[in-house]
Image 1 (tube, rainbow, N blue to C red):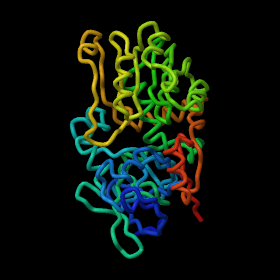
Image 2: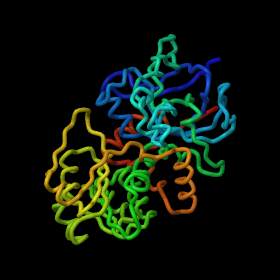
Image 3: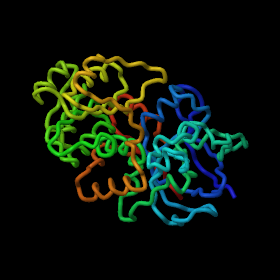
Image 4: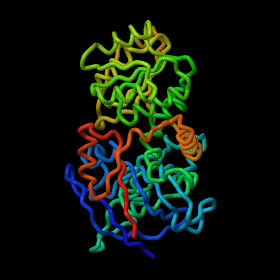
Length: 371
């Protein structure tokens, strides 16, 4: 049986999303059908719409969904209709990185998340004329009133948590917070800098505060973002449009930071961020520029100072464990990521995208209305 859905479709490179009716097939194997309550709009959705990554179009994007399970496939073991879930990235669950607890580096990651269908190239959504729409985006395609996910990327969350708020925990918020806690392992009393104060960078700021860093520096060019960073735990802010950010960070820290995160995707920012590291400092890179973008750094500065540079996908998190932990931290008032979001009806997706691109809104969340 198929389900009639409403979806926001990216039809061609750089064009606005269009809202249209479609049909979604029922769940098979270990899949779950989720009625989407709300879904975050992420930078990755926009760079795919604009074809920085070669996902085939037309497609139903969306990868920060949250909703209610309506139906489960025959091989689903631990989810049932009525469960509240956050949808996260897809991973096969059986390759070497997956069995080692590093599903974000799944051997099939690109195919499962950016392939435009399942690993065999099959799609689950058809438009009103019966033509296939590319889907399975991040194993969910949640820019739709209903989405199919697999049991391993539909994360059960408490019924008393605000479901419409939780979708961004599946990607953007998880990425920033996980980079700090899981990947860099920021330590109590350490010095940390976030290069970029968007949703990912500010999630890192909040996580650094949870981790006990004593100096937390937010770097950006937008004054309002820097003010919000102070609310969320930054002890210092640096406007890199007004001052030399490397010199400013060295002055604040007396030599450089122990840990840093680069979330802007700009190579020149990454180069400066590496220079702002202290001895034995480590930087995580999560900003996603167009494929093929190159960066530069001083090799001797890296070598003689014992610095570390590492790429990070999805905060290197095990979502089944990490997303419920973030929900609990939010409910305790220790991770107030609600201060990053603004809600839009899904019909205003293009306004939300424009606001995100202009920096007016840090984390748009699209709401779906169900009869």
